[in-house]
Image 1: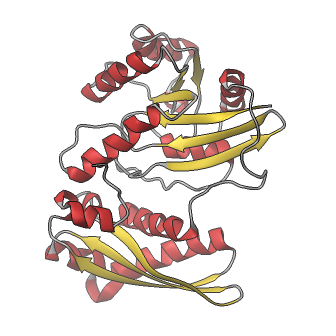
Image 2 (image 1 turned 90 degrees about the vertical axis):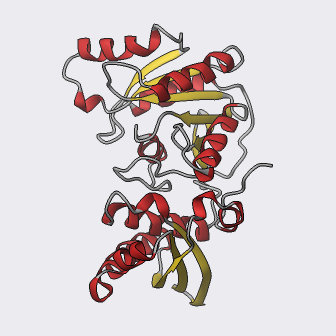
Length: 298
């Protein structure tokens, strides 16, 4: 049996969370078309007859513009030192941007002690194998990864080959978690993320980066029925009005979408009650950041 931790790293919006969800066969990490969707370290578990992989999804590495952004970069970079294999997720590109250059510097130092698997995601956007080869060369000529894999998390192609490569690089070890365990995240945290996901998908580009979600109450009123109360935190009064919408229409859409996702996770009925609160400049306020579940290192 082989087992260990595999960190998914990459710049924002390359499909890390979508790929992890596809590999474990269940939606745990939220996804959206907007960058910086993932803010915290999220662990999931894949188990089969070969052993067990604990995937560690990390925030996209980017140039931080506030204390929350710095926290996200710290989370991602710390994961480099806590894993057995690094999975660097990239997408087809004609040149390396500043984020990729920064990741290359980090990986160059780490790759001497930890194998790196280069994963070219979104292969559905490429036509021929020659296109794939050129896309991979952009990265491999700068970093000699242990393995290269081409996948499409969206279409589910190349995933079994990727799993085989990961197992081959992991050390021999025990099964850490029961076979039916998929994540160690508490349901309260999953609910917060699912609410934020709906906000990311439904609100304009300007707002989602400045929101957080905090579940204040999570109670099972009777078997198979939960009542959840959560606050959506934003930075401006004008954003509060946009989140609520005319006659509460936008907040209702966010709540309906999130409730359906939470009910699927719980396999139970949910009464979801959402409230919108303003905390000006919270992304640069250490007290607010900590109280919203982002534990800054000192």
